[in-house]
Image (cartoon, rainbow, N blue to C red; front, top):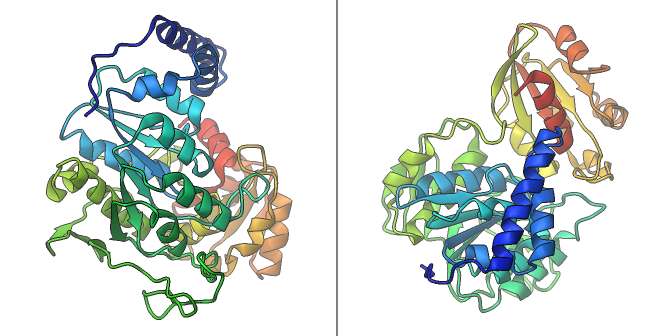
Length: 412
């Protein structure tokens, strides 16, 4: 672990104090947590502040298109078995938000940090992480994010020769290609339900062959590495072949995969799988995701899905028909303003469910559902949608800002 003998400079202390004051003012004005604006102010006053705040921490960075926030939370819970942890638990995952989070971690031993895919390399350079977890890469925010192979190339070049232990998903060819430039990689067989961004070889552009769970390029020989950790049903298999049961309160196969990767990360810091997985059971919800709330006398389960891969995973865990479903889609800055990704989602998986659609872009969603031959009702808002839903727990699936809107409406 880095030493704590080099305290913050006077400039850094002023930056931290100013950032906290601005964040508090933002909260008081009802403009959210204030973490981003506070971090921006602090970094303006001391551009090296992120590096200074991370010096005394053993840092883990977590990056992916899907599952970052949940995996960050699971790793943080596991590492609490070994010492105090500071983390950006609410998902502010760009440098400003990360700086705000670490500013509150003066007494922490470990930093567990979710990082937006585009910022991973820069944050790694600033924080000198001991471990980097790479979960998956797929299309997301098409108007602002680079094409997936370009993101993978950015990771590959930026992490080449990194001293960090890289814990990477062996089942995602893009992640494998990105991580392969690192000298110390731990491969985890975490699975990959969404495969539509990985049919061409990221190394040579050839067609990827996918027999069963394996994959390889028939042209250049790039292939799936042999994993040392694996998700196997309801268990995590460690490098010694021992099977450890996964007991989560979070639903779905994807969260079991997140737990498998989290257990591998925890082991890097000396936390055994049994202890790590037991601690993960404490997590009931993550920033409102998976929460079941009461609204208008009905039970609503709040589910976040931001891109095609995320919607596919979410469809796999909702209650079976005839459970009612409310879908909400916005296209604001934080979502990405391009909604063409809706056409990549297989909405026929909702057949048999009564469906209501809301949100800023409900008409875009309505057209997509019409083409998928799904029966639905377009509603003005959540209140009307809930009134129109037949009995039963309502599954509410929303993208990022739509999800935040819903949490405010239901008081969550």
